[in-house]
Image (cartoon, rainbow, N blue to C red; front, side, top):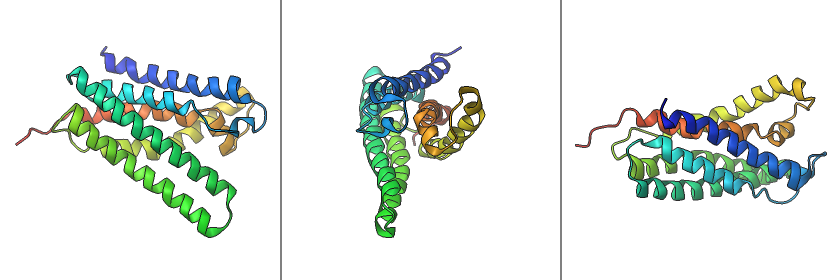
Length: 197
């Protein structure tokens, strides 16, 4: 068993745990208290995903390249988290078509820019000659809402929770799936490098 196969589930559980710590103990579990204020657990969660991605992204990359990638990727993920979070809040709170449309454009822009940025960083820092890493990362971002929804529907009866999108986010399913799928996407794209030439 390789270290990479252990990193993916451990990083997903650590990131999910960080989300729960903030929601349960810092924000408060009851009602919508968890929506108040900024979610600072996003910062260490992005760091966990970035470090896991630096480990799974290239088995033989030198340590300085892994640190550089984790720094760039963590900063990009946190900026994307902030923009996407604010866009979701704006969309939910503004029913003026122009404002809601701007929120959707911001969310879509971040959803396209993040995989491209991570793919470029992975190619430049982890594995020169890597094939299109942005494709599996983009797929990971696209399937996360679906897997989060399915997780909520499957597990909600067991924990006695609701089935709304708010419950899905409160339970941290998007965090769990992103923390598993993004490092996994980089792992899958690192298996067949292109020979430079």
